[in-house]
Image 1 (cartoon, rainbow over the protein chains, first blue to last red):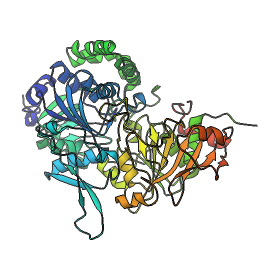
Image 2 (cartoon, rainbow over the protein chains, first blue to last red):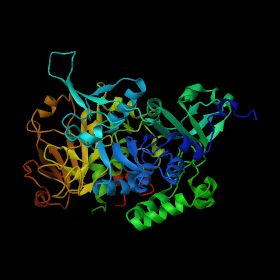
Image 3 (tube, chains in turn orange, purple):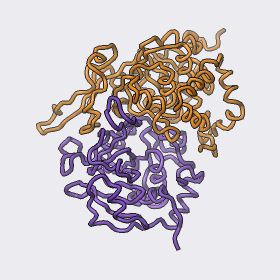
Length: 325
Length: 255
């Protein structure tokens, strides 16, 4: 089969991609933002494979993060924001896990986390910023001294220096670079040559991908080489940054994917309620993760009617008039 | 003759009135989106609404429910990413006004969106900074939305996520933050400003039907009320635009 010959070594199933690249204790960076382009299909597969002790690094994250925490996959977290917009201003399982002391956590801001990924991508050890001066982000170290000795954990949360280019007092914050083991992304298009095209906002996905040792990408569509190269200005990542590609339509559900489908308000509302109750949450995992054999099963469970409702207007990018209460 | 309007509507209008043509408005979720969109449609058509996620000047035909909502990417002049977005918030050539919300605020406009109680084992954990600490560091001014309650207007924050006027006076500048600071606090009872010199919060406006005493009772520190005046209620036109154009699905207006 000559089809997709250029990426045949990277094309694989969700199961194979997770098996090959994600281990117990891996440091994982999650693509997307709160309720958009979360790599949900990959997240569910990580949970099904029973992977433990993950060290998650992210800026603002919602659904994927919360399900991973709730399923007991996460040991350690570096984060700016755990929330799902109006649907869960603070993610429920994230909130519970911190309140109950179940995970190690370190707070940064969105810009700080983005800069840390950028530093990792540029292969520089740290990066300066003015963000956070005077705030408790620079007063509290979340991780203990013991945790600081572990792999992929910075020896300190940050440092401060005097701007070396002026005689006047000028404090600058230094942030440690991040180089996650694996970045997982859900995107709209992958070309048959392996080129990645993200539509809408890219958030920090590009920096996250470039900073990681390995990158797993799920996508809505695999498109011809001729198409992806016709307008290269729109492309986000060259092929050589990506190690595994899985075609998973609706792979971000119940979060949204610009141009393809909206976030699922009904599901997110249902999740918020269920996540509050440990027993109900366990049932939710059984129903939506463990008992799901194939992605087609998952889509059948969401149902054709809902998938139709969520379908985005391809011009505007979202589902116009969707009931979002 | 009096018009019926909700707290959220009064808050959105009160905050929107601060925005001027040419301002670059950083919007968060909830009332802040309502305010940013209302400002552009009613008071400052040449203001630009943008989101920390990177969406610049979206058409906002429907109200976004998150700063990453597909609606903040639709009809924009440009879709970018987080790093680009923060290069706008702090840009030396731009006048950027940020709308934020918080669980706690102190008299210098410093904000807590991280946790209540012990940081390591909190009584209540919130979402965290997100971009709030960044915009509070970099924007030309911050307008904060709050529910006006004693437990939220506190003498001392449990955690200082985002810096306002820090310890008052010129302490913010001394930290190394070259501009910005808390501009106003818009609550369900009124609008607070900050003294030009001391940078302490004072009552600027109380909403019609709200007494100064109620505001004092719901503030956890002494607040100067000597400059207080009654706020101008929303006009029929303001409400019409808010309800019919800004939030036609009444996702936020209703509350």
